[in-house]
Image 1: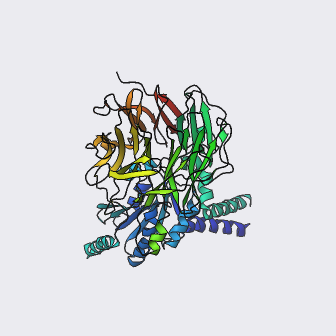
Image 2: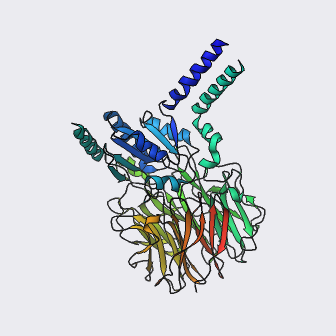
Image 3: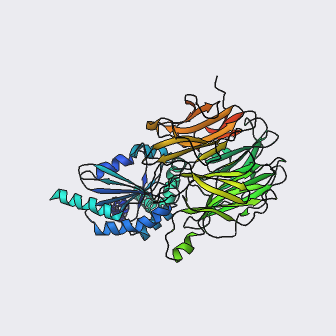
Length: 165
Length: 408
């Protein structure tokens, strides 16, 4: 009995949190998630990338961002699949894995009313992807519509590092 | 002991669910996460509904629900519908892109042509399938590809010309791989077309209109006074600028020169998922509406051309900028022009209407004619020659079909 209890408690305490931080686990992006992202990365330079599995330009950019993440461990990397595909986590995850982004903080739109999710992020955003938001340590947001130039990301990242010195 | 077992089972269940995020998400809150109200092939479960009137005034709907395309008709302007006919069986990986939808067209004798896209592989390459009904919509032939080519095709548009030939246009990526093999870059897709002289049973070989169009936006299709097809599309101009263009065919097989609708200067390497709408009035005027986020202008716009699409008027802004106006649709109906679009105030999506009785020279003040609190399809306009109607599928409130009242 004790053994069972102990095993159960160990599972209960260790597994769920362990799974939540497991590499590649997708987090459902719902109402309020955007504020959660902003809160949890407040004070850290953060790159938030919006993309989707059917978006042609995204397929080219995603691996570049995977490399960028590898080269810039000081930047928090967040991806959000903003396609209307709450039912395709396997495809989403597989593309993130191949792009080297499995260990990023990965979300996917999980509200069928995507307009409402986008409105919380940026009321002017009509859903075009890819889209990247660079959030500086002081909360300043720079939005890049379409594929980002890696050189621009590099420049922004350098400025973030310089700001801490 | 009982508690321990329960706890253990709960923990294990959590493990299994977490290991299968799709299953977990699906089980926990499927209807919340889906654009659809339900999962059956029924109209009320549809995410995309397309209307068309037949020559006898019958309203036909083609919709996408439960992974299937279905068709039904109404003899009373949408108050009641016939038993639906499933065009596809079993379930298909239908193109769910924001600008994708099944297309339906009815000829003068009541023949029905249908087209839609599926994802043909795990890389989301598309394929355009076509079918037709020769028995008044009671049955449809097994769907087949519109072209033998295996590159990605999406965003088809179909329509009958006055002589009863089906004209089909779509976005096609067949020229991408050969260009890349030659070391050239290839942006976007290409605009292709084909025609069917047997009501949509077989189509001619696919031919190109233009390379390097945007690959993810719906097309606008209309026929001019001579019955020639006119296609409005988001092009990729020099420097990766995704502005709108238009092409008028000299006949069903001869695309004319591509002209620019406006210089919005939207340079973006992205999928806007937001194509134009086109209608041609009895006066022969081309009326186009579109969305842009360009350097020159941002938002929804309207422009017209009185010289067959060669030149367009200065774009007129449409809708309230702070309400994200989107998904414009325009039609030349018996009472003049009507235009609808969506606006979102953070909670509610409304369909807004404005009308013109002078061929687009002046427009009525916009007014909201419908709204919903959850996901919705694009608002569409359709006319039976006597009246213009709004066709709008919503998740929370079902399918709307309502007459557009003439402005005083």
